[in-house]
Length: 398
View 1 (tube, one colour):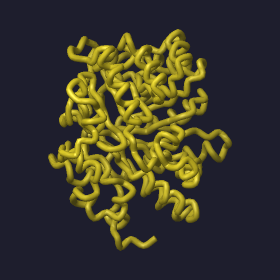
View 2: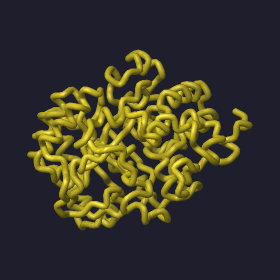
View 3: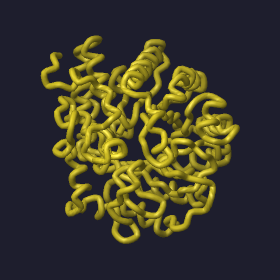
C-alpha cells in the first residue's frame, strides 16, 4: 500500500538490495518488505474499537465506550500463533486506540516471541514514559503516531483539545526509549497546507519517518469525499512532498518519507525521474514492478476487533470469515471465495481507465475500496487517480 518516496525518488533503495535477500518476506528486512515476491500479508489487527479521541476521518467510527465481542487474550494468542505459522512478517496493532487495550503489552510481547515484527498504530496520547520504557524493552519495532497538522489544526481533526500536545509528548517518550517512531498524516483539503510545517516538525524533533496517507472514504471518512483534494491538488501535493524530501537529502538530513493508499504516486515519481535522472528512473521502474501496487487481499489483510477478516483495514463492509471459526491462514488461502481470489489478481478484473492503463502492472488497479465507495462497483476505476489520460495511454512516448 506504500510508495517509498525516499527509497525511490532519493535513491534510498536499489533493486539489487532486494535481490540480495532472495526477495522472500521471511528474509527481507522491514524496509524492503513491500518488494517481496511472495507477498506474505502484513496483518493489520484492530485489537479494539474503543478510542479516547473523536477523529473526523476514523475508518472504524470509534468512540470512547466499551464494545462487546472483542477477541479475548486466549483468542488473541491463538490468532498470533496462526499468523506466525503462516509466515506473516509484521503484525500492526491498531484500533480504535490500541493502548486502551489492557493486555496489549502481553500481545506485543507474544508476537515478538513468535518471531514477527510488532508495530503499533496510535494517536500517541496515551504513551507515557513508563509505557514507552515497557514497550521498548520488549522489542516493539515501530510506533506510527497520527498527526494531521500543528496545534489547533490537529486538535480539530482529532476532536479533543490538547491532542497535539499529548501526541508530541508520546513521540518524544518513544524516541527517548529507542523505539523507532514516525508520523502518519492523512491529507485532506482542510490540512494539506500543514505539510510544510509537519516536515519542519520532523526535522526539528529528529523523527525518522513520515507517512502521508491519501484519503480513503471509509467509516466516518465516508462523509469526507468532498475533503479529497481532487486530481490537480493531489498532484501538486505529491510534487511538494517530493521536493521537501529531496531538500532533506540534499542538506544531509534524510528522513524516510512514504505516501500511502494511492499508487498513482509510483508512476508519477517514475515520470518525474525520467526527466531528471533517466538511469535512476529505470531502477525505480524495476522496484515498482516488485512492489506490484495495491495489495489489499494479498500483501495486506485485516483482522477486526471481533475476529472478522477483511481485505484491508478500510474495507469493513465485506468479510471473508471469522478467526473464531477458521484460522486466518485458512481463510486467506481459500480459493473458493470469489472476491478474495479475484483480489489476488485484480489486474484481470478492473474496468474503465484502470483496465486500459499502461501502469496497471505497477499500480495493481489502485484502491478498490475507494472505487466501490464512489461508483458502487468494486472493479470500477479508482476516482483518486490523478494521472492524465495521456500519461496512462499505451501511446505515451517516453
